Image (cartoon, rainbow, N blue to C red):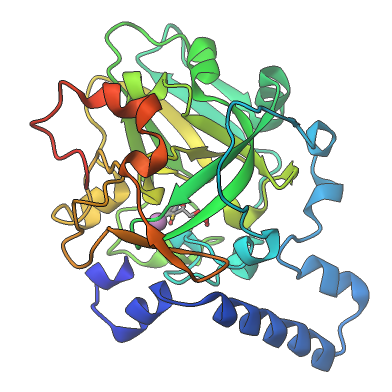
Length: 323
Ligand SMILES: Nc1nc2c(c(=O)[nH]1)N[C@H]1C(S)=C(S)[C@@H](COP(=O)(O)O)O[C@H]1N2
Ligand SMILES: [Mo]
């Protein structure tokens, strides 16, 4: 996606990186640690999972019970592969941001709930997670760059957050905003991007059962590179809609402009529903590369979730629903 800004070869090859590249990169990291003669404690802290579980104030909430209503017919992406292949432009416009992301301080983490609600409020993440109660769901994730993964996320339904926030009937959209701290997230020093990262959905989409606020993955609190302490998962939409490290949730009557929509309005839109028959302006969306096998498989309409979400769009055929 960086290639909208500068169409460089490295950006393209990055998006086509194979699992072998990922493994090679890990071996180099491990070897590098050994040669530097670091002690065990330092090595643990520098592992992609970090030392997170032990220090996390919500660690006791995991593993959350799996909700059997959300299963998938694919193998899960192995955790160690997933931890080292991420999109999180705040920490760099490439996939190997896991180490840089460890700089993010996620405790304490206050969130603003504001806009068209009965009464705006601030809530600490830990308080929110304890109040909501967590469950595990197995979800597919299809990046607009034509790779895909399958993840055991933990979290709670976005509809539960709506119940807590008490939006007014005048609210038509939910707008999500990521933190802004260029000192910690050096990608945010790149002024040509419209920081902070913003995403949005309609109220109807937000109320759909599949819309999920994610607080954990692989039976643990969310690793920083996954968007700790809380991110979205909208599995029927391209991955960029699943905004990470959310600080603010605003109810509004104005359609939010997504980060990528702002960067490249001819290539990325507000709706971004997965559709194999609508190509991206620069590549086909017919197939996807499964992250951990490298295998190419056909992409499905709404990423396989059409039964649950197609009805949301039946009166919206004039909209660009698939970009
Ligand atoms: N704040 C923020 N959220 C983000 C992104 C980002 O760069 N910044 N990248 C998006 C994209 S393009 C994808 S594919 C997913 C990647 O999630 P993962 O790293 O957990 O696989 O996060 C999405 N959420
Ligand atoms: Mo993505």
